[in-house]
Structure formats: C-alpha cells, structure tokens
Image (cartoon, rainbow, N blue to C red; front, side, top):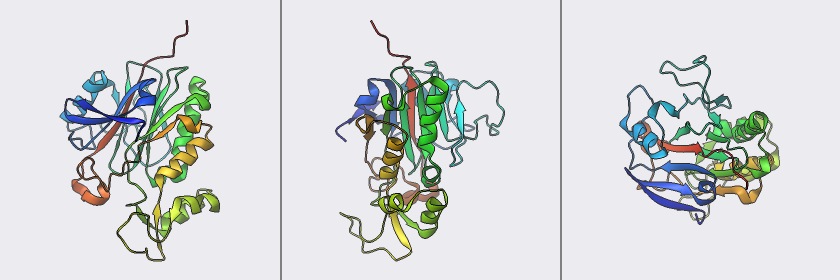
Length: 272
C-alpha cells in the first residue's frame, strides 16, 4: 500500500496509485459511492464518477462486462455489438483520446488500470477468475502495443482492490478451467493454495477446495506480457475482508453495490 494513497472525492474516499497518477488521471472508488451495474438507471453515482475524472457522462466509457477478453476501443465508430443500453460486450477498454475516460465495475473481480507515458494510451481491465484464466491483462497489454505502439516495459499498471487469497475459496472446477486454458502446473501451484491461509482464522480446506490468489496471478501475467515489475503496483486490499471500505459480492450477495476503476489519458509525454 505504500504506492497508494487515499484521496477525498465528492462522495468520500477514493484510492489512487502515486506512480500511475504521474502518468494518467485515475482512481478506484469505495462503497461510500453508490454504484449499480447498469447505465439504464441514469445512476447519479456514475455521474459523480464522470465529474470526478473530468468528463461529460456520455464520455465515461463503460462496458457490458461478460468475463472475457474482448477489447473495445473508445471512441467507437458505431454501436455494433452493443448491449441494449449501448454498452459494448467487452471486459477491456483502451483509448489514447484524453476527452474520454474508461471505467470498469467490480464487486470482487480485479480492476486493472494501465497507462503508457510515451503514447498517452490507457486501458481499463475487468478480470475475475474467468478473465484471469483467459489472460485478460495480457490481452490488454497486447492491444496497447498493437494499436498505439506501446512498449510493454514502459507501461505503468495499478491493480486495485479485489478479493484476496484470504477470502477467495474456490472449487476444483476453477482449477480445472485454468488447466484447460493452458496454464501449466507450476503456475497452478503458485495461484491455488490448499490448507490454511496464513493469518486466517479458518481451518484447513476440504480436499476439493482451494484459495485462489488473483493478485499473484495478475502480477505474473503482467510480467509475462512484458511489464517491468517495478512498474506494477498492487493495492493488495481485499474486498471480502474490508466491509467498511468495499462491496463484495461473495460477502454481500445480490445486494452488493459496485466499485469502479477509472482512468483518463493525459496525452503523450512531452519532451523539451
């Protein structure tokens, strides 16, 4: 958490990553801001997000997230493939247009914000276990590289609050899904831990259960995509074990609100 700081927004607390803030405007919201999953409600919370990042609500780019690796570029030339409310079916948004801001919504899944200081390109990624199994963050890095010419080793990443290994108990079907997606046994052994989590008050897990470490998986995948480990910043704040700060679908069920990760490009770095 040394690389992150709490800031005051109109609704209360928000979280920023200091190294990323030097490259792109961004924040992660807390449960103090009431957010819902859809745009159709004309949610005042999302209007507050747009205001805080400095764009009109129509230029706060959001997606109908489907736990995949589809990439959408903003601004979009058309509404083809969009959900009924106009949001595209995707989990990765990219842009180099500073008049737009990108947002992902989460309630345990991992929000990842990326920025390239050289080109000004940014990305917002929604990665739950399915997106992580499919390599969503690597796909996002590849999109910045292919579309904007970003050099992966120069990209700065901030990984926001999400469910931690202390609270993320999963069944063997999740482990099998990672294996089916092509992840090797060494990776599986790193990301899935059986037994008791250090610091946990719970007992050992049943033999068909494990704790999934999405933080470690995200870090490994960003490094595999070419990011410099010194430019990857992890909040390591668990949504499940911090009810005073965050919503958690695992803990709160259908009544859970949503958290947002939001980023806006400042344009390419200027040189004298």
